[in-house]
Length: 336
Image 1 (cartoon, rainbow, N blue to C red):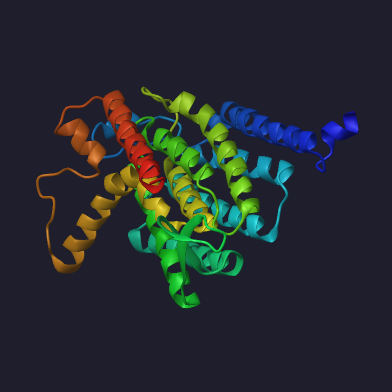
Image 2 (spheres, rainbow, N blue to C red):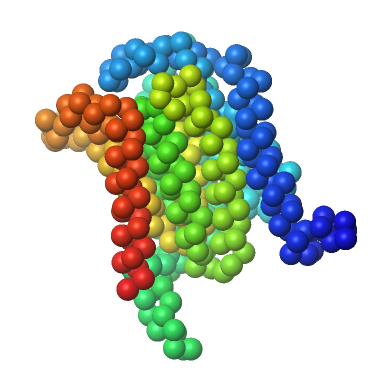
């Protein structure tokens, strides 16, 4: 009986191992947060953010801790392939670049961040090509199989094009999620919703990665729950770039793993609008001197709090409701 329960070769044994994994993610992250919060850097406040001065003195960069909780638990309880090992190593690299910026007395310049992001994104794009192939599938378009049932339409891209698109997705995801981390509980709440959606996305290439995506997303959600406990308004801990950048990277890789990379758009639409519009505005202003959204404060969560006079809790709750509605409507659409 005991050998059956603990054996990875039986359904009951697999379920027990998954349970241990989830307990490790939840308990391990909570332990790291409680034990190491006093040695983490303190936030210096954000001069240009709405209520940015309120962040001064809070424990910052704890994204390092919940990402470590996730990675250590995954190495202990999930079967590690070369693909998953590379994914986790790139996740750590993305987290470390953010943490080193969080911990520095002088913020890193845009060029330094951009080059590091480019290296990580290109590495992720190359890995995606090697392990997932270049087929891109679309839930919105279905074709009839030879057996009479509908399957998602797909196309195969040339390898260089696929690598460039995959790298662009990773780079964009890192930065839009990073820009969304400006209100207590907002980024984490949206991340939990996105992880739940990615976990049930399915996989165009087969069941193994589909099942593993579900396990990994559940593990990460359980790592985020202890952090959200301390990050709920009024927060005492901030994930910093270490957490937000790593979460963006993970979302992009889950989309690439599934084979449905365009699903990133509906699942992370609020991230894209909240963080991405500010990046677009800045890029157009610096490159071609075009000033868009002149009457809109960006990121949008700052517009909601400053211009619309929403409180922090209202902003988080309403942004999450919008994202939830988008995901549910998209699922209803692809079921037609």
